[in-house]
Length: 468
Ligand code: ARG
Image 1 (spheres, rainbow, N blue to C red):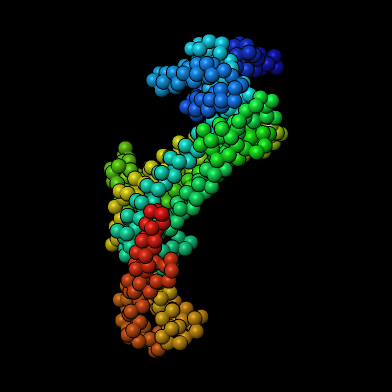
Image 2: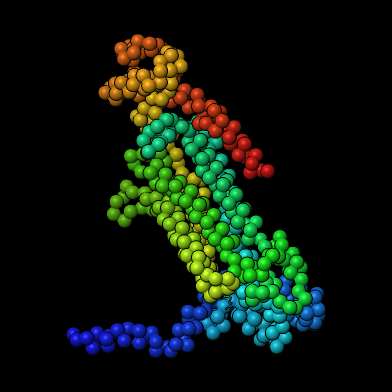
């Protein structure tokens, strides 16, 4: 094949795409209706507030205001019933609404856009959407917290190995472990609440970028839309996408927490752990290995977290080089936010279901803690406290005793007293109070610790926090 034929095929490659003509490609790359149609409710809500303000401020007549209002309400009914018929030539959701309005009310439709631009319009719509998204994420997280508390209470004294480096460290209770996730979700909800606060500001009336010469009342539209205040700077109002990034960043952090729990559930459901059985409703079988029950939902939560982080990344990178005020790059703010919201909703729902229905196996958790000599620290602490041995030496003695237990294949509290005394004569029978797993967890009653009584107190405090 010669050079020319290569060129030919290269030409054919883009030639086919180009056959639609530059205008068609421009239309396709420019149009946002395939995704921003999700904003139609917010768009109509924003326009209703805007037109009411135009009427009140006598920028348009009362009759025109009424006609436009009726038209917008009719469009809302139509879209609710029939959906939106996409037309790439109409670019975006704003133009779809306006075009339909013109069909319904005639040329008066053109007055709706007085003292407004799509720049402040889209910023307003998107803030309204993100506001709703935050409210629904928060409701789902609250429900998840209730489930975590219920399971924590049920297992406030179920002993399992606590890990560091994924090595058995000290015994903890499952209730205590689940409460750790409760705390993470509490912080996630705070982050979303914080994002909400900054989202809830009105850009409407900033117009294209510089404000407007019409005598508008930005406070009126801000209030009508439930925003806390109009944004103070019109350039900032149309160019700011911090609220979308705040939402995505909170979503990343939350997804990260859910992913860590998903990872633990995957481990715990594996045969060598056996700490839990996956509910039928959240596992899948294998087509060839009949014994399998796969943790697909948890695995997908773990992976969705990666996609959500990707969404945040995409918008960060889109925004970082943009001069003020509006650039078309910003049209691409919506797909990552929509995607992250959908994925996060699924992740929260899946983890809520998994935690709600998982069958924990306390006997397996206890036996893993025993095999891992989870109470070895208690033995060393006992030597320090009761026998007045320096910690370093106590650590050494404990090591020898653990080795002995390993050789005899028994948990620490089943070693013979005489054997332990052979290692160090200062040991007496009171040692057994320290060695059992139950004694070990019971002793860790410091604030926030793993003792069952402490866990119950934490659960009550958590319930109180949710009720406040
Ligand atoms: N579809 C556009 C977006 O989502 C609306 C704003 C268009 N503004 C403009 N000046 N072209 O960003």
